[in-house]
Length: 114
Image (cartoon, rainbow, N blue to C red; front, side, top):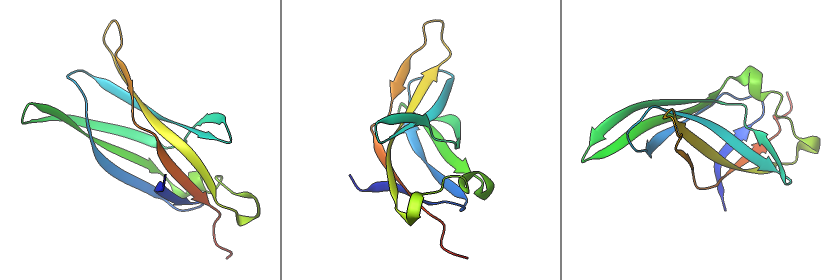
């Protein structure tokens, strides 16, 4: 699996895309695993929508984190870390519908020397 997101510690992160979800009011969070240890990827994850086109419910999705937050995503010895992440979506119905994205990789490398 090639890295879907390449992040350098200390850089601003901003990625966007589109996800198709059924009708409802949805929330989302990003969960990642590194060396078999799960953690929540410390990014803001926003959903905007839906935009109905051709009978689909397209939601704009944005993952972002300021440089001050990613500065703490350091690597040991400058080695690149590769995490596997998924986005979990949940609606606010009385019996919540939960769906998880396909896995994608996140490569985190250390900041270059100053």
